[in-house]
Amino acid sequence: MTEHAEPTLFERIAAREIPAQIVAETDRVIAFHDIAPKAPVHVVVTTKEQGGYRDVVELAAGDPALLAELVAVARGVADELADGDFRLVFNTGGNAGQTVFHVHAHVLAGGLEEGSLA
Ligand code: 5GP
Image (cartoon, rainbow, N blue to C red; front, top):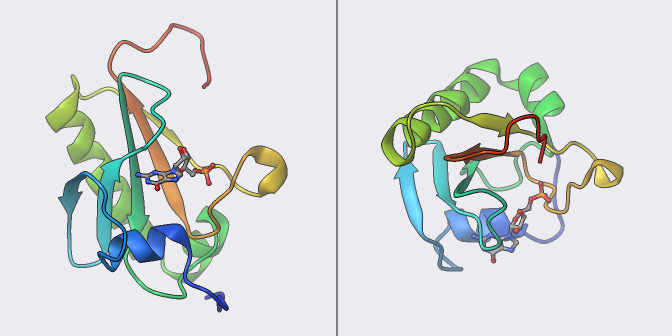
């Protein structure tokens, strides 16, 4: 776990302090549409806990069951909003494009360009 001085954007969305278009949730995971979609279906799947894991590497080491739950929610989102096929992207570190330092995955689906990674 990483302690945050201030809640991250996604912690604030999970706490319903900032609105988002929520598409799925479990007790510990929440999924909502990305505000700037980069694919026909672009959903962020993140964990609800406050002061939680910073990235997927920390989550995998600290709570693999929660990572599995996050992936299962991603699977359900792709089934619900697309044809079931999807990319699951975890930006890990600022130099890789991570801007919100609370673990999250991008579900990208629906008419993806063949060969494109983003
Ligand atoms: P990262 O770059 O950390 O992997 O992903 C952060 C994502 O959050 C970006 O894709 C960005 O478009 C999205 N985002 C930024 N601000 C908001 C917001 O206020 N609401 C929602 N739903 N998504 C946001």
